[in-house]
Length: 513
Image 1 (cartoon, rainbow, N blue to C red):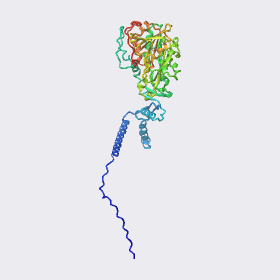
Image 2 (cartoon, rainbow, N blue to C red; image 1 turned 30 degrees about the horizontal axis):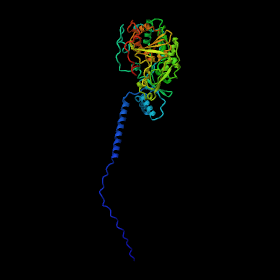
Image 3 (cartoon, rainbow, N blue to C red; image 1 turned 120 degrees about the vertical axis):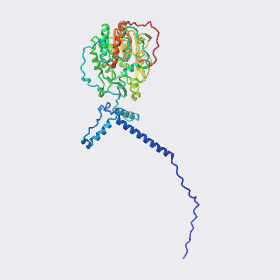
């Protein structure tokens, strides 16, 4: 029996001796990532916890102005509703629907959608501040046709006192103190915007954003009383006109939001019924409404565009029976990308992203202008009614601001002298009267320091037109009219031009209006 051959396997190669296992060092990036994740989780937890606490303790919304509805009410507890699940479902709906600042969160959501290019909801109306409905405005009693008391003691008929500064005016003959410096470069804006900064609607119409003030109406008793008093104190041959300037909410408030604004045309008619029959009322709402499809009001400012002022001046010239030049005879000038008070008051990102062009018109007829201070002292003469163009506030292009008394002399030979008593709304109408009156004086009801009765008498004024905004008709600004009727009573007023005193340089850009 053969012995099997034994095959020898080759010796394995030499292998290194096993080494002790080394501990692996942790990955720094992984540790940092874990720490950041924990930190982010803590921050999110804290944020959600803070939000939850705020949602529980902050006052809850009760009504949505955007959605035009009452929000959900907390459900009433009953055993039946509890066991049926209706109570708990109602609680969930209540906390979801009445989140604090409901409309603000809705607008914030729309802002994020616009930021990322997502479609925005149909609710393109935003409110700045608290907006209330006009309660029972159609059920208010019909106004009486009898004029209100026109005695000097009736200047506070509306129940409001004289505006700040009016009480300190000199009510006796003699010079008045010069006005002190003001830190506000646009004092008329502050005066007109004080009560409306928190009552602004931001809407989108025809592809553009518009800011409009909400008008709640008012009696206008102080306004009517002052005009009636003036009517009794000036010569019967002097024509006194009341031509209030409507605000843009009269024409541009969406139909579904009309319950938040008062009808200014009805308001003006009501005020005009309180006037002395010898005063000539002029309601220009219908004249402007016929052109509401044109750019007659600013979108980013609280004033009308010069085109709107043109249609207002045209209505007045027609009523006064004086000639009036067509706008085609004027030279238009444009201030591009302007941004006015509606943005500065509301800080709306939509308005900021949608500036507008402000177009004003240079008269096509010769004229000269003289500027006086508030006390009717000569300041400087000029051949222009327009100042520097300021895109941030284009309306100050007119008259060097509100504080000056201005006299315009034209080549019109009809023996008519016009005195425009105005707030800032009246500024834009003045250039359109250069083809209608031989002389035009312009003074602001809030700043003039001479006696109004004396100015009308001593300067030979034939026509006085009050062109102030709807807010001034029903608000405290109307008390200024009575103040300028009473101050320095019995004084004599003499036009110091052309024997001027020291000349004052025109104001720097932005120093007026």
